[in-house]
Amino acid sequence: MEYLSCLGTAKRLRADVDAYLSKGMQKHLEKDTRKWANRGVVFTTRIKQLDLVRASADVLYNRHNSKLPSEVFVAKQDVAACRAVMAGMPLVTCRRIVAAPPRSRFSWKHLSILESSFAEILFLDNDSVPLTDPEFLFDTREFITTGAVLWPDMLGPACDPEVVSVWSSGSPSSALYGVFGLRRDPALWSHSQEVEAGQMLFNKRRHYRAIRLSHYLTEHGLAQQFAYGDKDTFRYSFLGLRSPFELADFPAFAGRQDGRHFHRCYIAHRWHGEVLFLHGGKKEGHCSGATTFTLSETRDFRPLGGDCVPGNGSAWDMEDLEASGKYRHRPFPLWDRHHQFWQESLLGAGATLEKFL
Image 1: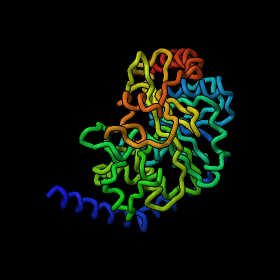
Image 2: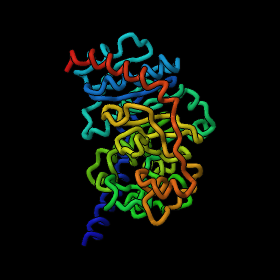
Image 3: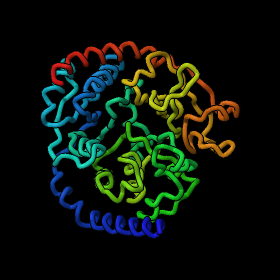
Image 4: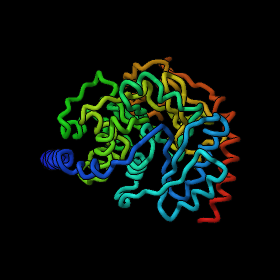
């Protein structure tokens, strides 16, 4: 009975997606006639986390000397607070969402990307910190060729959704493959790893339809029975539309302190092996000091002993991995050098923000 119910839900979702692609999307295509130009960084945030955006922007501009402009999207009533917190940063513009209020907290991300004035966009979650000036990404072969770069999450297809506390939309049994008429190919990296949507790179002119479809799926109740928020609607939208994208070549790995891994601590996202972004955990108090990461030495992520492991599952079960020799702990002095500066910026922004809370 459960199988028939799932099959019926998938069929209804398929019909809805077909109707949206053939008719529903047209109204947006006609409305979105603004002339996008240039490249830049896009953030979106609730008022209570504006201090995180300020701290990340401080690292971007005052540590890396980036020339990329940024747009920070907030609710209409929070624009004044945004401008106060971002004062003294000439490359940062505070903007409000013009479209109807998002139905899902996850779809603020899509609307910010779609309403941004930039044609080429690096989207960053409010707690994702670049560890070098990320402008070079726009000029990489991967982005020029495909027009889109996504980063993997820590979860992969060996994870049992009944065991792992995040919906495993990357599972081989995910109904979303059938919804889009896809046959899962385990040899394809883009089929074998979930996406982490805290950092994404888009050429909006090339991939407007995929971004719009991801927004639709994120707000669609039936789609959300097979996915978790926005994190994999981007991947399935690109796959479903047969739109090219690059999935960065190493999965995310969790930070480690005091001999333990914290799932709410920093997550390291890499580009050709080098850590490029640290994401998450910065207001939780778990990661106040030096951090090391368990980083892979290979992309051969076969599960060890049937465990749910990085590249095939959870990054928090590390004992067998360390013994295998394929993975090692690595101190991360680059973040340690930025960390005090980031914290001081966070405290200063928090003091300004308190006046608006």
